[in-house]
Image (cartoon, rainbow, N blue to C red; front, side, top):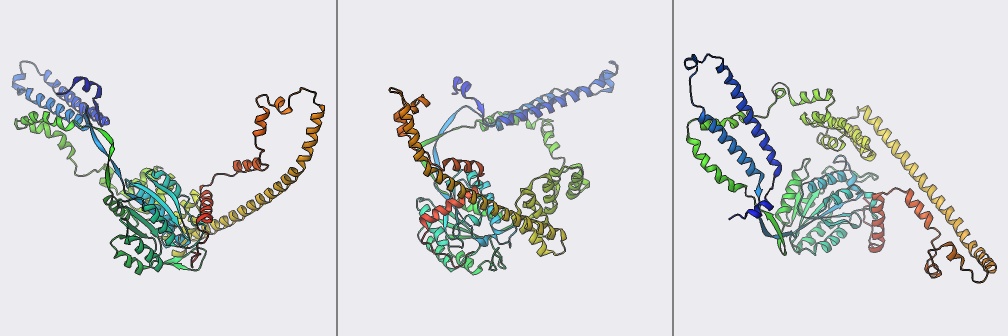
Length: 561
């Protein structure tokens, strides 16, 4: 039996917003009833003695009963979907013991542009796509080049990973080159704490013999699997700042694909590779019961209301009821597709052009089917990220040129220079691309010179201040003794110390315990207030400190890229 008191206290709906569906249901019923009343008004205009001969009399009782029954059924179905509940059930808590460790290559070769805008940006896009799909486990992030460093510890707060991805550039790494051995030494230490089978996602652009050996050694005695994503093409590209060409080692990838604990993921322009990876990650997840933790869930009582519909279902076989009950479904099935009037006469691209002329850029972007048109619409709407996403799907020179404009507008001039360069290489007749490329390069050169000048001036100013402060520090003790002696001679007997007079809230003992302030502390505080917070610079200094502590004896890799 249901306790009435418990029902009053705990009754609520699990999905209360679905109750808004009662509004259109009742509105349609009222409109139907009012329309019927209007149709019956003309009968009153006929003389009463002629009505039996002009109007066929029929009983509308069954018809009205069917309509009210249909209204009750639809309202009851809405209540069922809203999920009425008043009881709770305790279930044991579950904990996902599996984790995901992302190892990102930050060597200079990741800036190669055989994958636009460059390999590193492509890797960041893939990581963002994976985190947006919610892998349902804790995720850690490690960056490596000549050394390996932990960026984000294992956490299910994916916003921290997304924030740190913005700062991941090769310039923050203290030792250039590519050494996968340090990355997997750290991986072995981190993953040894987890007994549940987990996934290590390695994102890199090249694999040499040493890297192949490191991966095979890691998989010999571990329950974890490696998901390998190589962001490079067999043709390769020139590494920025060098004359070397970095390309995919196809033989090494084929050799590793034969290992059952190494899954090689083929890079795709869409999210197919990420979706497959997420599916594999979820298959490997291990859920364990938490005996000391229980969860209380509300029991959805909506399905039990279905039994109230069975008596009404028996009326289905009565004459006229089926036609009335099927009317709402016939209205929905009157069209075989979700087509508007414009869809019958105009193509999607033409509709998008009309919206573009009206200045409705977001709506136009949704109408366009061509990626280039979509990207231009999003660019005019101010959605730079979506514009870049669709420009990347079109590998023409014009798309690279437009992509460069988007990057320049957003302030990412390095990426803009790469995009303009790709456009010029593909089509040398694009004069605007050449001019924009020259302007961006000149801006970057001027910016670099200006930053060097500012750094030199700050160093010079700091040295000057330190010299003046050192001179002042040497002259202070002598003058201080004279002042102290003079004050002692002039002070009459019984006069309290000068420090106690100047500071009513302080005592002599407190003054003795106070430490002298650092002469350079005020200047340091001024610098802290003046210098803006730069997360990239913070990560760079953090990695340099770790390098001096843990990697002093690390040999420099053969290739500095």
